[in-house]
View: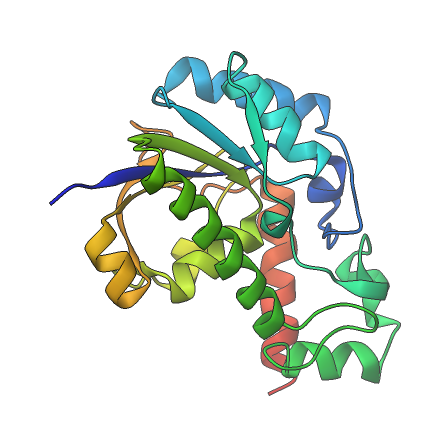
Length: 232
């Protein structure tokens, strides 16, 4: 059974990441100097395997990350692989959003079906990402591309891992660090039958985990999860 290898990679750190802001589809920020240094350090210490194609979110931070990790590759931009649209909450931190009161609390409590003002719900976002992954896999299989990288966002990777990948990972394992991610196998039979791919390793190869987060971002994520729990 033939398997195609997909390397899902989250973009490098931005200043918005460092601040713990909701940097979504509307926040087109560049990598921070620290983020570029971190990517270079990861590339020198571990292995980002050679690929035959690089697919990329249209956001600047992803295009820059692909340029650092795969400088010789020609990028194929996939618009549906952009981060979630947080609407009016985009670009703002948790502390800033607490002032939104009921609007923010309602979204945190019902984010699967409730969209932030002017944005998209998790359900809508997941459907968009599924369309993007399907288009990538159709191209990969049609053109017999054995290895490819998909440089995208933490939210996109989590959406794939949640509903389109086996084995099912824990929520903590889906908090992918900057420059990190997962290697997956995609077999035509399994994809056509069940619309799932298989998680087989950590990106970059040689790293012991994909969930290593910048301390500031880890603190912001913990605060967000705590805020959600408070609303239950």
